[in-house]
Image (cartoon, rainbow, N blue to C red; front, side, top):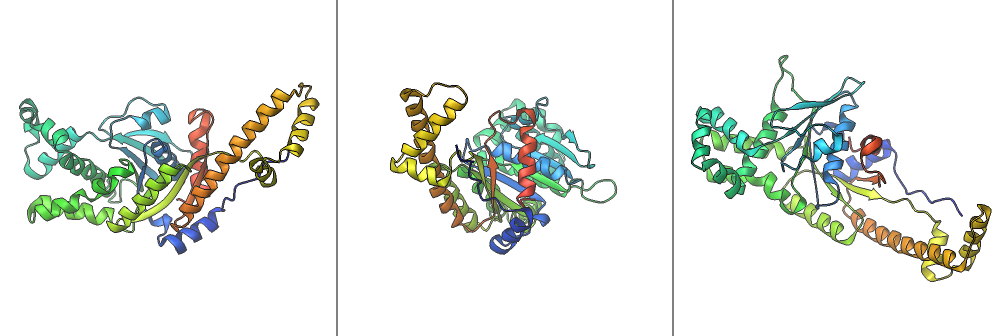
Length: 351
């Protein structure tokens, strides 16, 4: 059988140049990486790989989840995360990866204590159901609390006066609601015209719209995820939110040459059938018509899949963004899989 055809993957230098020229931002200056994507595209895995890649550069990184699914702990095979920042990786480069699962209730207590010195009243508020109302029934306020915790961590100073974290990676809500999530404080600032709430809301809005923030969108090369990605990018632009990379996840390697793929799709499989028969015979497998026919059917399905992927890839190319391509991991993130993705993210200029 012919050798597989390699996908065109740019080197790190070319990728960085492309990201600056076409996307208008410098990945090396980004401190807050927001990772979103349609459900099922692997955005949590990509956020984890991105954070791990940054820590391997000797940086102190905080990885944040806000949906309470414990996806980070499952990815790194560590105990469930809480509202307290926990170190989960200490890299030999000196970098560290910390993680937190932000809890809206605890964030509300911190918020009330910081601005109104009534954090101790949380128990009473909880008793009367006020906390559940604020964090569940009023989802807009819940988003304010969650993004507020991210803002606090991103701007926190250490004992020496420097920033506590070199970078923060946020595993954000899916594309369907990420714009509202990131933009919620702009709405709050319009409602609360004065006071500490207005000031913090404006500060958070400046942070999420800053050139040091980038919103990365994860997708698969399938029709629905690609269309949702295109729609999300348009919404992010309209909201004046800084775009980062498009991350194409779970890519399969081509198993046939372009010539063979074209022949299979056109139904010209005679030559390929002969080679399949010869290959099977060389390893002492009986090349019956049923076996060869089954393999050719698989080849046709593979060819159709690749044709669809290339069509969707062409649609994404029209967006003019840095596009990072991550391989499908047959065994998932276990056995070093997340490390493979972290290397790919770094090599392709996303960080």
